[in-house]
Image (cartoon, rainbow, N blue to C red; front, side, top):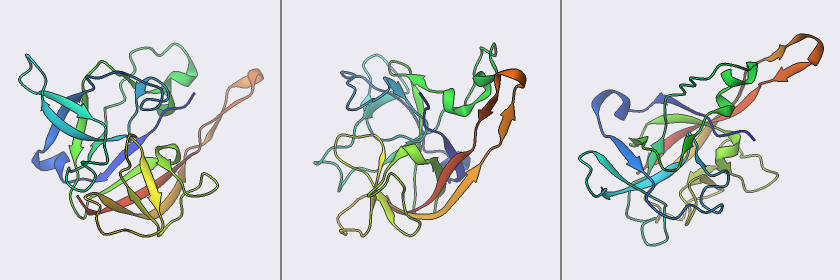
Length: 192
């Protein structure tokens, strides 16, 4: 099962702060975490400090009550895999974080640009987002949701500005090939 991938192309919080450490402190369900993992490219709201912690805040799932008021943060954890026993261990699609571990959450501002793998966007049709459409936060999910138009009440909104396919097929001898081309969508933040 492949996990989400994120690229922080031009995100201001990479350089001048506004980076939060967050941890999910609730009941893990397959609705919120389909693969029981926190994936790069997920979005969240940030809550208060966890009990007994100095820096780790609560990772909050976007909800109807906060969609118009709470800023969205982008989950992006460095893909460090300490096990390199198989060729597939090097694939970013095989990296995710356990739901009980802290992750990095980047603050997003107007003009920021980031890219996520196609599986991190809930598309309107055919599981394929359309360049020129928008993405917003949705109630009860940690993935971006594609929208053809904006309602004007969204706190977070981004525009899909480019589609890219990156990666190559790696041949591994007699056992065949490992296909790693990945489709990314670049998103420019309109508001947050």
